[in-house]
Image (tube, rainbow, N blue to C red; front, side):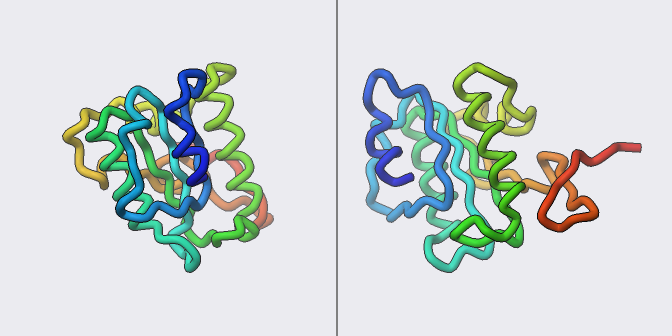
Length: 147
């Protein structure tokens, strides 16, 4: 994901979906201006920092990018825990950013936040904000029904 963020300044790049990225504090963000950037990170990642990812999304937004971070609770860096949720989310984000499908509403709203928005405003929770609940099989997820 770090290489994709660095290469995002190329004129043919419309956006980046980054999974469990390594986002050191000094990494540049100016190349992300005018792009849609959605970074997905587990809250239990011990290899790379979810807080650094959240910080990068805020810095990139201030630099003119449209950003969002999605937290996968209970996942891991290798994306093995909750693998089907990672896969389903990533597929939806990529097709949405490419215009081949619709982005989840909360993601589209986060991407529309003003550059001055706080980092937490653009941070979503996979389960709470995107309407996914564990189904009968913990490895599979189904849409939550609202009463």
